[in-house]
Length: 165
Ligand SMILES: CC(C)(COP(=O)(O)OP(=O)(O)OC[C@H]1O[C@@H](n2cnc3c(N)ncnc32)[C@H](O)[C@@H]1OP(=O)(O)O)[C@@H](O)C(=O)NCCC(=O)NCCS
Image 1 (tube, protein in one colour):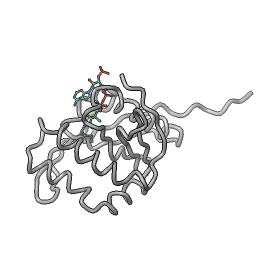
Image 2 (cartoon, protein in one colour):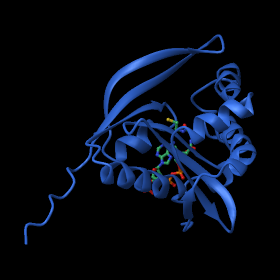
Image 3 (tube, protein in one colour):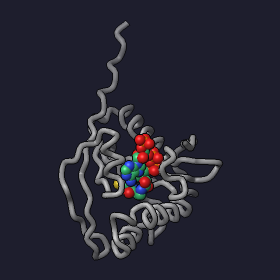
């Protein structure tokens, strides 16, 4: 398993993360979404300034393996697990789990008790294995394409009460 280092997102990461996002969708979602759907999904990074603004507007962390960006995850509005993308050549090596662990810990530390994710069909089993429970099946239009996803929720343990002694 890869042992990724984690750190907060920096604006200078944005171009590499946009490329990572495209590659992740292109390769890791290919079994569940056809080419037109993946193209539409990827178009979220066409405007790199808007993509960078989406990452800096959320709590975004990046994973590093051998000093290179290996994935990223973001928590939006302290309640939505907005993005989680791993570099395809590193998938299945624990990078996604390390990022999700960190997002859940950060959310918990902020007093969040319920995390929501609009899980792609490619990530649904990943989230289910982490305790996220499916709530509803959705179909969203993105750049003229219909894409299915599933709203899933994980209840986080309440933060430990302050010590009284
Ligand atoms: C989903 C994703 C983030 C998982 O990242 P990853 O680094 O490969 O995940 P990990 O290696 O930490 O895997 C953790 C566990 O989930 C399992 N897993 C990972 N991806 C899976 C998948 N697509 N389907 C089923 N199980 C999966 C792994 O087998 C592993 O199980 P184990 O702990 O029993 O060995 C990654 O595949 C990805 O970027 N997908 C494309 C983008 C996407 O759909 N993102 C989510 C948007 S909501």
